[in-house]
Image 1 (tube, rainbow, N blue to C red):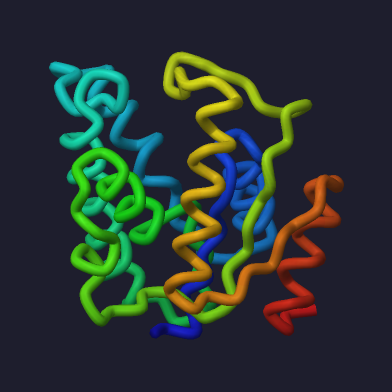
Image 2 (cartoon, rainbow, N blue to C red; image 1 turned 120 degrees about the horizontal axis):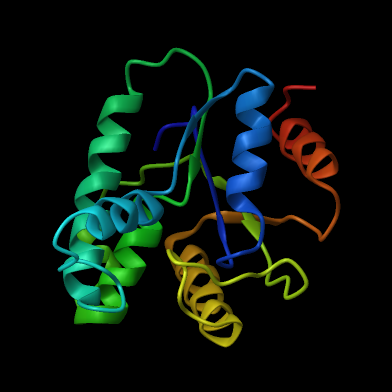
Length: 178
């Protein structure tokens, strides 16, 4: 476990990336979501590892990218916020291939015990060229994430459906940074 590495996870389209952008603007180190980066790369390339083409290949790439992100973040001195990350990628791989999250993670607990979770928020959810699933699929993914976090012993802090600045304040308060 690394107490400096804080995971922000939850429902797709629930405001995670917007929250990370606001934390970055306040000077905190952030790591963008692997999935979005993979989709961008795949759309510019051959597109074989897109989640709507080959979910297993996409999830494997997400695990690899999240591990690389985790390793690269070790050089940073202060708190680092991750938009999704290794746990999310392991959950996607389990869903796509049956390989258990525990097999993917091993005994490794990559993030601080406290994890921030954004709930489903239909009013702000939007599909786009990189997010082609619907709100119902996003909610199913959210439930897989929260069940897995419970099973792994993470303490979940559900972020309410409030403004971005209020969410930032809540995260910083919980991290004892305000």
